[in-house]
Image (cartoon, rainbow, N blue to C red; front, side, top):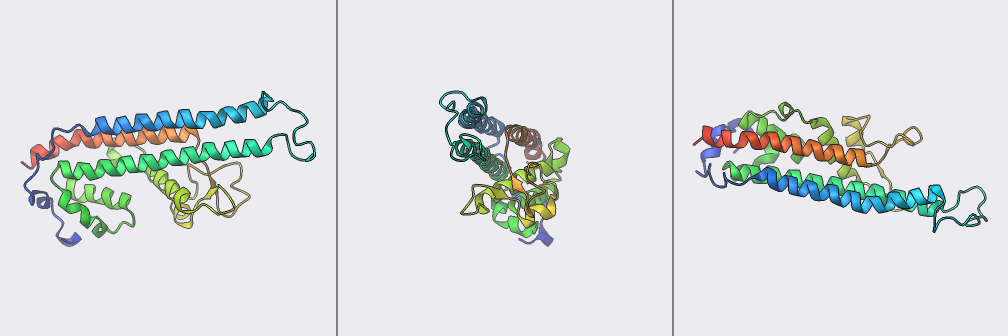
Length: 239
Protein backbone atom coordinates (compact mmCIF):
# COMPACT_ATOMS: atom_id res chain seq x y z
CA UNK A 1 0.00 0.00 0.00
CA UNK A 2 1.23 3.52 -0.80
CA UNK A 3 -0.16 6.91 0.06
CA UNK A 4 -1.32 7.32 -3.53
CA UNK A 5 -3.60 4.30 -3.20
CA UNK A 6 -4.74 4.89 0.37
CA UNK A 7 -8.48 4.45 0.40
CA UNK A 8 -11.15 3.84 3.08
CA UNK A 9 -11.82 0.50 1.42
CA UNK A 10 -8.48 -0.64 2.86
CA UNK A 11 -10.32 -1.09 6.13
CA UNK A 12 -12.36 -3.93 4.66
CA UNK A 13 -9.36 -6.08 3.80
CA UNK A 14 -9.43 -8.16 6.96
CA UNK A 15 -13.20 -8.28 7.17
CA UNK A 16 -13.12 -7.54 10.88
CA UNK A 17 -15.04 -4.32 11.37
CA UNK A 18 -16.71 -5.70 14.50
CA UNK A 19 -13.62 -7.49 15.79
CA UNK A 20 -13.60 -5.83 19.23
CA UNK A 21 -16.42 -3.35 18.79
CA UNK A 22 -17.76 -3.94 22.31
CA UNK A 23 -14.58 -2.89 24.14
CA UNK A 24 -14.83 0.43 25.97
CA UNK A 25 -11.43 1.92 25.17
CA UNK A 26 -12.12 5.11 27.08
CA UNK A 27 -12.57 3.13 30.29
CA UNK A 28 -9.02 1.82 30.06
CA UNK A 29 -7.66 5.23 29.04
CA UNK A 30 -9.26 6.84 32.07
CA UNK A 31 -7.94 4.09 34.34
CA UNK A 32 -4.41 4.88 33.21
CA UNK A 33 -4.97 8.64 33.40
CA UNK A 34 -6.24 8.22 36.94
CA UNK A 35 -3.10 6.31 37.86
CA UNK A 36 -0.89 8.99 36.29
CA UNK A 37 -2.61 11.67 38.36
CA UNK A 38 -2.24 9.53 41.49
CA UNK A 39 1.42 8.82 40.75
CA UNK A 40 2.27 12.49 40.29
CA UNK A 41 0.43 13.65 43.39
CA UNK A 42 2.00 11.01 45.64
CA UNK A 43 5.52 11.04 44.21
CA UNK A 44 5.99 14.73 43.43
CA UNK A 45 4.12 15.65 46.59
CA UNK A 46 6.98 14.29 48.68
CA UNK A 47 9.51 16.47 46.86
CA UNK A 48 7.32 19.58 47.00
CA UNK A 49 6.93 19.03 50.74
CA UNK A 50 10.70 18.81 51.14
CA UNK A 51 11.09 22.12 49.31
CA UNK A 52 8.41 23.71 51.47
CA UNK A 53 10.06 22.55 54.69
CA UNK A 54 13.40 23.94 53.57
CA UNK A 55 11.84 27.28 52.63
CA UNK A 56 9.95 27.44 55.94
CA UNK A 57 12.96 26.23 57.98
CA UNK A 58 11.00 23.32 59.42
CA UNK A 59 12.54 20.16 60.87
CA UNK A 60 14.81 18.59 59.82
CA UNK A 61 15.84 21.70 57.90
CA UNK A 62 15.85 24.11 60.84
CA UNK A 63 19.57 24.17 61.62
CA UNK A 64 20.62 27.79 60.99
CA UNK A 65 24.27 26.76 61.08
CA UNK A 66 23.98 24.18 58.30
CA UNK A 67 26.16 25.11 55.40
CA UNK A 68 27.49 28.18 57.21
CA UNK A 69 30.92 27.64 55.65
CA UNK A 70 29.31 28.65 52.33
CA UNK A 71 28.09 32.10 53.19
CA UNK A 72 26.91 32.89 49.65
CA UNK A 73 24.55 29.89 49.49
CA UNK A 74 21.32 29.50 51.47
CA UNK A 75 21.09 26.57 53.91
CA UNK A 76 20.15 23.20 52.41
CA UNK A 77 20.51 24.49 48.86
CA UNK A 78 21.63 21.10 47.54
CA UNK A 79 18.68 19.36 49.19
CA UNK A 80 16.27 21.92 47.72
CA UNK A 81 17.77 21.56 44.24
CA UNK A 82 17.58 17.76 44.42
CA UNK A 83 13.93 17.89 45.47
CA UNK A 84 13.16 20.38 42.71
CA UNK A 85 14.85 18.19 40.08
CA UNK A 86 13.10 15.08 41.42
CA UNK A 87 9.68 16.74 41.16
CA UNK A 88 10.47 17.78 37.60
CA UNK A 89 11.62 14.29 36.62
CA UNK A 90 8.41 12.93 38.12
CA UNK A 91 6.45 15.25 35.85
CA UNK A 92 8.49 14.12 32.85
CA UNK A 93 7.79 10.50 33.76
CA UNK A 94 4.09 11.32 33.70
CA UNK A 95 4.47 12.70 30.17
CA UNK A 96 6.09 9.42 29.17
CA UNK A 97 3.14 7.50 30.64
CA UNK A 98 0.70 9.83 28.89
CA UNK A 99 2.39 9.30 25.55
CA UNK A 100 2.33 5.52 25.90
CA UNK A 101 -1.34 5.67 26.92
CA UNK A 102 -2.33 7.70 23.87
CA UNK A 103 -0.18 5.64 21.52
CA UNK A 104 -1.67 2.40 22.88
CA UNK A 105 -5.16 3.85 22.48
CA UNK A 106 -4.56 4.66 18.81
CA UNK A 107 -3.05 1.23 18.16
CA UNK A 108 -6.01 -0.53 19.74
CA UNK A 109 -8.44 1.84 18.01
CA UNK A 110 -7.17 0.71 14.63
CA UNK A 111 -7.63 -2.92 15.65
CA UNK A 112 -11.16 -2.18 16.83
CA UNK A 113 -12.20 -0.77 13.47
CA UNK A 114 -10.49 -3.51 11.49
CA UNK A 115 -7.52 -1.45 10.41
CA UNK A 116 -4.67 -3.23 12.23
CA UNK A 117 -3.10 -4.13 8.90
CA UNK A 118 -2.63 -0.40 8.16
CA UNK A 119 -0.43 0.28 11.21
CA UNK A 120 2.81 -0.90 9.49
CA UNK A 121 2.10 1.66 6.75
CA UNK A 122 1.95 4.68 9.07
CA UNK A 123 5.31 5.98 7.88
CA UNK A 124 3.83 6.39 4.43
CA UNK A 125 1.99 9.42 5.81
CA UNK A 126 5.43 11.09 5.88
CA UNK A 127 4.69 13.49 8.72
CA UNK A 128 7.93 12.85 10.56
CA UNK A 129 6.59 11.26 13.74
CA UNK A 130 4.16 8.61 14.88
CA UNK A 131 1.94 11.40 16.23
CA UNK A 132 1.81 13.24 12.91
CA UNK A 133 1.41 10.02 10.95
CA UNK A 134 -1.54 8.84 13.01
CA UNK A 135 -3.13 12.28 12.81
CA UNK A 136 -2.81 12.28 9.02
CA UNK A 137 -4.09 8.72 8.73
CA UNK A 138 -7.21 9.61 10.71
CA UNK A 139 -7.73 12.68 8.54
CA UNK A 140 -7.15 10.97 5.22
CA UNK A 141 -8.64 7.55 5.82
CA UNK A 142 -11.37 8.16 8.38
CA UNK A 143 -12.16 11.81 7.62
CA UNK A 144 -11.58 12.64 11.29
CA UNK A 145 -9.97 15.95 12.23
CA UNK A 146 -8.57 15.72 15.74
CA UNK A 147 -8.99 19.48 16.20
CA UNK A 148 -12.76 19.07 16.10
CA UNK A 149 -12.56 17.28 19.45
CA UNK A 150 -11.95 20.63 21.13
CA UNK A 151 -8.70 19.25 22.59
CA UNK A 152 -5.58 21.38 22.28
CA UNK A 153 -3.73 19.30 19.69
CA UNK A 154 -0.73 21.63 19.57
CA UNK A 155 -0.30 21.30 23.32
CA UNK A 156 -0.53 17.51 23.02
CA UNK A 157 2.23 17.56 20.43
CA UNK A 158 4.34 19.64 22.81
CA UNK A 159 3.74 17.02 25.49
CA UNK A 160 5.27 14.41 23.20
CA UNK A 161 8.16 16.62 22.12
CA UNK A 162 8.94 17.48 25.74
CA UNK A 163 8.80 13.82 26.68
CA UNK A 164 11.29 13.11 23.90
CA UNK A 165 13.59 15.88 25.10
CA UNK A 166 13.66 14.46 28.63
CA UNK A 167 14.22 10.93 27.36
CA UNK A 168 16.95 11.72 24.84
CA UNK A 169 18.39 15.12 25.74
CA UNK A 170 19.60 14.95 29.34
CA UNK A 171 23.24 15.96 29.73
CA UNK A 172 25.54 13.80 31.85
CA UNK A 173 26.42 16.68 34.14
CA UNK A 174 22.85 17.86 34.70
CA UNK A 175 19.33 16.64 35.38
CA UNK A 176 17.89 19.45 33.27
CA UNK A 177 16.39 18.78 29.84
CA UNK A 178 16.65 21.43 27.14
CA UNK A 179 14.38 22.12 24.20
CA UNK A 180 15.87 20.55 21.07
CA UNK A 181 16.12 22.33 17.74
CA UNK A 182 13.26 20.21 16.40
CA UNK A 183 11.05 21.20 19.33
CA UNK A 184 12.11 24.85 19.24
CA UNK A 185 11.58 25.17 15.49
CA UNK A 186 8.00 23.97 15.77
CA UNK A 187 7.16 25.65 19.10
CA UNK A 188 9.55 28.54 19.85
CA UNK A 189 7.56 29.38 22.99
CA UNK A 190 7.06 25.93 24.45
CA UNK A 191 4.38 25.44 27.08
CA UNK A 192 7.05 23.59 29.08
CA UNK A 193 9.81 26.20 28.90
CA UNK A 194 11.19 27.24 32.29
CA UNK A 195 10.47 30.96 32.31
CA UNK A 196 12.95 31.49 35.15
CA UNK A 197 15.94 30.69 32.96
CA UNK A 198 14.91 30.85 29.32
CA UNK A 199 16.69 34.17 28.65
CA UNK A 200 20.00 32.88 30.01
CA UNK A 201 20.40 29.86 27.73
CA UNK A 202 20.52 29.41 23.98
CA UNK A 203 18.42 26.28 24.48
CA UNK A 204 15.45 26.72 26.79
CA UNK A 205 15.37 24.55 29.94
CA UNK A 206 12.16 22.52 30.28
CA UNK A 207 10.01 21.87 33.33
CA UNK A 208 6.89 19.79 33.93
CA UNK A 209 4.92 21.34 36.81
CA UNK A 210 1.63 20.03 38.18
CA UNK A 211 -0.58 22.36 36.14
CA UNK A 212 0.99 21.08 32.91
CA UNK A 213 0.55 17.45 33.97
CA UNK A 214 -3.12 18.14 34.77
CA UNK A 215 -3.60 19.92 31.44
CA UNK A 216 -2.00 17.04 29.53
CA UNK A 217 -4.26 14.52 31.26
CA UNK A 218 -7.35 16.52 30.32
CA UNK A 219 -6.24 16.91 26.70
CA UNK A 220 -5.63 13.18 26.26
CA UNK A 221 -8.98 12.36 27.86
CA UNK A 222 -10.88 14.83 25.69
CA UNK A 223 -9.37 13.64 22.42
CA UNK A 224 -9.80 9.96 23.26
CA UNK A 225 -13.38 10.59 24.34
CA UNK A 226 -14.12 12.28 21.02
CA UNK A 227 -12.51 9.52 18.96
CA UNK A 228 -14.29 6.84 20.95
CA UNK A 229 -17.66 8.50 20.30
CA UNK A 230 -16.94 8.30 16.58
CA UNK A 231 -15.69 4.72 16.61
CA UNK A 232 -19.06 3.00 16.66
CA UNK A 233 -20.30 5.29 13.90
CA UNK A 234 -17.31 4.21 11.80
CA UNK A 235 -18.06 0.54 12.35
CA UNK A 236 -21.75 0.92 11.47
CA UNK A 237 -20.91 2.93 8.36
CA UNK A 238 -18.60 0.27 6.92
CA UNK A 239 -20.41 -2.92 7.80
